[in-house]
Image 1: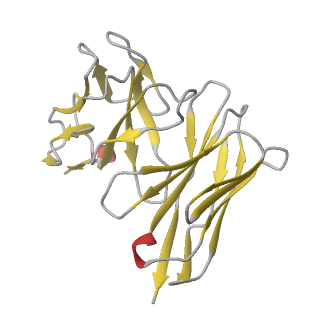
Image 2: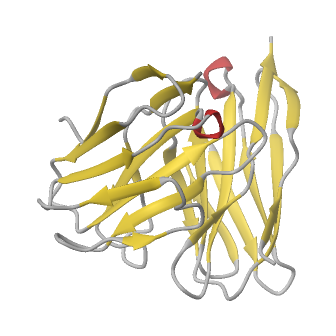
Length: 109
Length: 114
């Protein structure tokens, strides 16, 4: 079966760095996505990785290792507004998205 | 910029009642999707459409029907609502996941079935 695993909840301190991991087992691979979802709101796109390596976008970076079935989202200089759920999703061989349950990130002052 | 708009935002139904959720997008996207989101679970695809006049089943299609009569609209119908369909429903659109890799989501519709 297809499976996406990510931690249920993480806590970090304002101004610090946090890494959210995602491991996957899917039927084929056509890319990995990270989305941010604030409570009661819609998910919004953060990043897309299809090749191995690190993609940096401001305070957020996303890393992919296809051979290990592994990705992480790195958030630097954490701000209170970063408190949200972070969703990992993998596009399989049929170009369908398989979603993880999301990681709820709590930022403390 | 409206993007993706869903109506209604909230609805309470009794078991057995029917209803339709409307999704409208103004980005001229070919692809549209209906997801449901439940606590502790990832987004699950109900139905999707790859263009006007087309629909296809996703992961959890039972109990739902859809129509895409116009490119900008994607309707999700519940013919006979059940408590198991209590969920938050999200509509999304894209120009093609393989191209830009981005889904644009509506604000969600919270449905409670009593």
